[in-house]
Amino acid sequence: MPNNNKLFRFEIDGEGVPKVFINDVEVGVVTLSYQYGTSGTDSGGVCSVMATVVTKDTDEQSVFHCDLISKEIFYQ
Image (cartoon, rainbow, N blue to C red):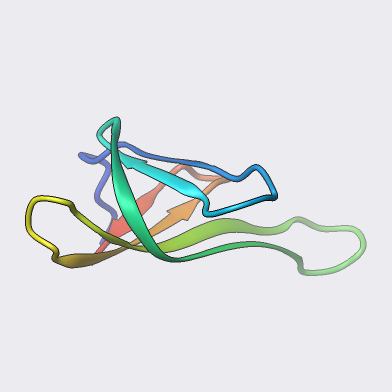
């Protein structure tokens, strides 16, 4: 289910580890995947980011999936 109560932001500079921010707090990145896929030559597609992150205070892993088109955030 969507969870838009958490703010999700990421930065990729092409060099080094991507940065992920949850509610404007940087968290550790375990994995990050950015995908754009089209469903055909004349129609739209998907644009999304999925990240597994670790919070510094609990060492607990969480998974975020952000649909960059609809702006929905899914949190597990």
